View 1 (cartoon, rainbow, N blue to C red):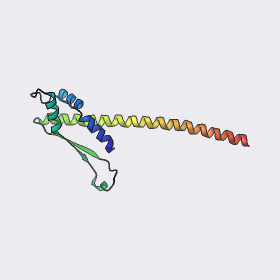
View 2: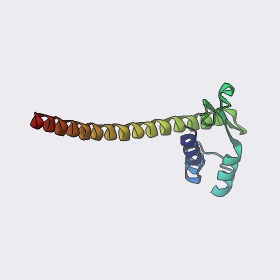
View 3: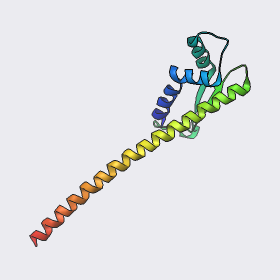
View 4: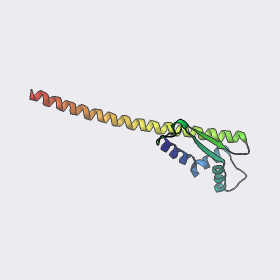
Length: 130
């Protein structure tokens, strides 16, 4: 789960993703350079993983949540952008989970067919032996 969050967070903070957010919410429009606008947005974002302190001794501890904070002049716009980030994270996590479930189902279906064929072969050998 932590590795999955790392990947999602990296995608979320990628230049292309930030440019899309800047354009969608018309952020930092007074700044002419998109590179500077991306830098301003990236600098205004703080993402903190929330971890259950009672599980702190475990090496495989997974975050129980995220705290996304944006520091901007307009609090409503900051809230809207933060909510957009949260929705993006949730959507991406659901997509990744669904893909993992599909791969697992395909593997288990193939294994069922393989094991069923092996069982049938063993049953045939047993019947031939009798």
